[in-house]
Amino acid sequence: MTAVTPPPETLRAPLVVEFPFTRSLGPVQSAFLTGLRERTVLGVRTEAGEVLVPPVEYDPVTAAELRELVEVAATGTVTTWAWNPQPRPGQPLATPFAWVLVRLDGADTALLHALDAPGPEAVRTGLRVRIRWAAERSGAITDIACFEPYESTEAHEPAPHDGEFENPVTGIVAPARLDYTYSPGRAQTRYLHALAERRTVGERCPSCAKVYVPPRGACPTCGVATTDRVEVGPRGTVTTFCIVNIKAKNLDIDVPYVYAHIALDGAGLALHGRIAGIPYDEVRMGLRVEPVWSEDGRYPDHYRPTGEPDADYDTYKELL
Image 1 (cartoon, one colour):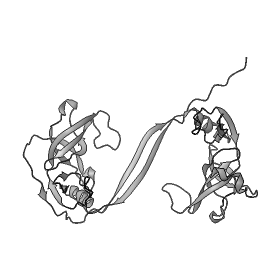
Image 2 (cartoon, helix red, strand yellow):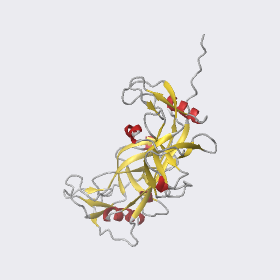
Image 3 (cartoon, helix red, strand yellow):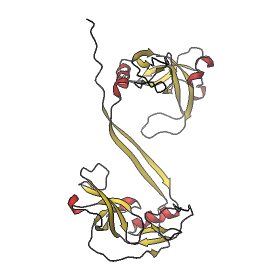
Image 4 (cartoon, helix red, strand yellow):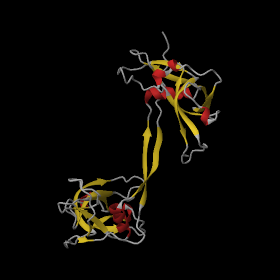
């Protein structure tokens, strides 16, 4: 009887993808966010006479430019809602709350925000609410801390507003963050375990014979499972590259540096890697390189020239 080696346990790890998104503001968005800082809610009137809150700069129906700003009330009516029993970090409230769409008095569209309520039984469509302003405001949607129930039924008509404030907000930085648990699957788990042994292992498609590195578990071209494991490299060839001149946050690498597609010997497609050990302006297509492993030996930190003659273009042209 032949002994069968069980596959390695599938890996799992927490992963955070985070980056700041910086954008400038046009006159309408600038007035809206500056108004929130001043406890004033502005909308914009369309060609058809509707008041949109939050305001937009172009009519969603006619695409006409919109500039007629109006002030609406800080009170409104819940049009629909969903209960959030387990708030996540960064959400408006730390205790359970309702996500609500609120049509502010004087507006014709609804604004999405949080409603502070003791439980889902306290929330309903048609519930009257008002804005609870943040104690400290900077000109952002978070200047509205949340909504809270409010019994008033007083009507409010939108009033014209010139959108002029002192020290207007002209730009914002919106952080984007995604927290999740990543599981690479069986194919990439084997790949990562092999990297820990300073080996690069791909999988060959039984139909087209292309070797995928990193492996994907199936051939995206033929649609069949890839189970035949193939060790490739460790050396390879630079197929294409770019010179990076902007330093990334928290990345301790001096610019300029080179990031390249590298076709490892025996692989059917190129993978990404940084090139070092050579002046950035001497990196070229066809350069032969080898891996330099990280201090913990778990992955190639970068690739350096091997000193071999450059590869002939015909040997890697199909991998560009």
